[in-house]
Image (cartoon, rainbow, N blue to C red; front, side, top):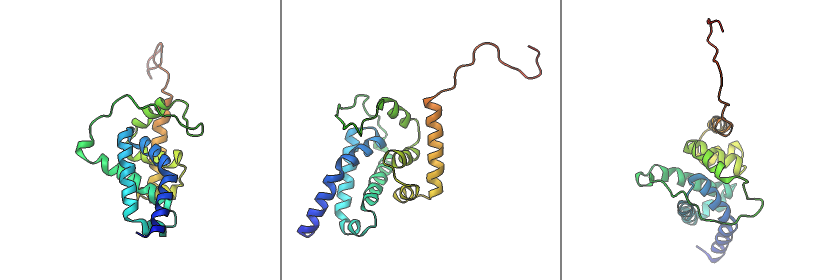
Length: 175
């Protein structure tokens, strides 16, 4: 790699490192795994830097590598271990802060990996349907259906129906 390309690569990575790390954490829910995913992403970006530079949207290219790396990691048997409940304390800027991140994390845990990837890409990272489909290499219709199902699951989980008290109605029976 030429010196100029190396400098462009370094600047590209430095500008996006924190964002990649946060989005990787939202996908996998473990800071150590998130760091591994970002390292894998940076390595793959370095290996294919000429393609990345030539891409219409280098950010989407990088995010695709990150999301695909996470999905690949999920398929590996040794990754089926459960992470610790304690997360490292890390300060965030006010724009990045989520008011109740424990609830968000619990909700994201309740949906499947593909729905989680779609929800994070669409609503946390604000990618379009087409960009999300390109990153995950799925059809735009699949993005829409996965997003709809994921949001429906999150709505039910975040606002469970109130318990019914008293008598229940039975058709055909007099009260």
